[in-house]
Amino acid sequence: MSWVPFDDALVPAWDAFVASTAGGRAVHLSGFKSAVEDVYRLEPFYRAFRDASGRIRAVFPGFFHPSRIYGRKVVSQPFSEYGGILLASDLEADERETILEDFRALALDALTERRCDHLEMRFPMSLPAGDARFSLLPLFKVAVKQLEDRETMWKALAAKDRNVIKRARENGLAFAERTDPETIRSSFYPLYERTMKRLGSPPHPPAYFLHLARSLPDSMKVFIVSHGERPVAALVAWACGRTIHVTDMVSDASAFSLRPNDFAVWEFMGWAADRGFAEFDFGPVRYRGQEIFKMKWRMELRDYSYRYVSAPGAGSPRNPVSGSSGIMAAAPKIWRAVVPLRCARAMGRRLRREIGL
Image (tube, rainbow, N blue to C red; front, side, top):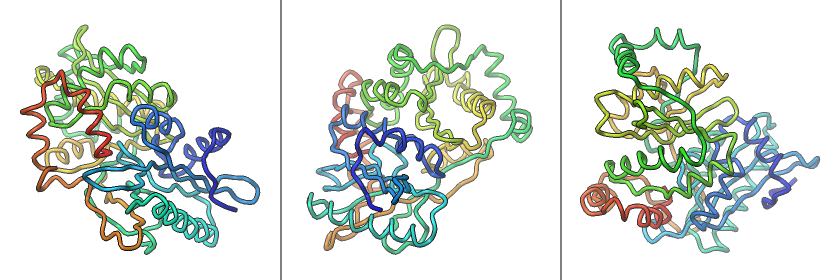
């Protein structure tokens, strides 16, 4: 029984394990590895724990991430809200202890060999709470909804929110899944690029989304909200097991009066429920406006945190998502005011690689 390096022969068993394990997300799947390697040129650190019969009992996906801002780390997973070690749900206590003890030793060896300070795991949901081997950095909340049939979910909404959706439909909005390269390039990406500019955030390049669509064809779902022939909003979601997770919601500011974001979320929930998904993960809740929007869909808030293994003498890890002071607070304002849209794509790739978010 041991942790072994990832190789292509592991792909079917690796992906089947992720899809069947609680806490698995699309970023744990093998296709995410190839997208990050090819687009961002980060070096992977992927390991699987196999028992005596060869079964996978745990996986760890990660990348070596050198950063001028945050130092040298192993990050699981960069450009994502999730990652970290994923443990089989049926582990016996002694087996779990062996896996975690060996993983910590593996992590410390990698940190020492590569002169990294920390191994960072972004909300590893299958890691036991309170395990002293892994330090904890509490951050914010994450919004999750247990999906029900359309009628039950509709009745649970406030009357004013149901009226907003009715008006959006009367205004001629239409919702459709369209996860093809041309839609990603011509409909989703222009909305995404302008939304990132409005929010003061560097965008991923188009190649990132296109590669993910190729390498994760059964997981990635792109939804477009149209007004006539014009795309006015889009969602990107990721299916893994019975959970579907939204990572990107973008829209045309000039169409806000049509309420395309509300319409997109409602139609998406119905789409997911119709296809048998049990859980809708709407991602982090970082500020009050986000909380108000997400909670009207009758979400549950859960604590969200990062977990770390740190090299001896490395000190405490720096909060990578802190926006309350310094450069991280000023960056969105500078990006909105200074960076032209035509330059955002090239600069965005470099900055995204630097911060790993």
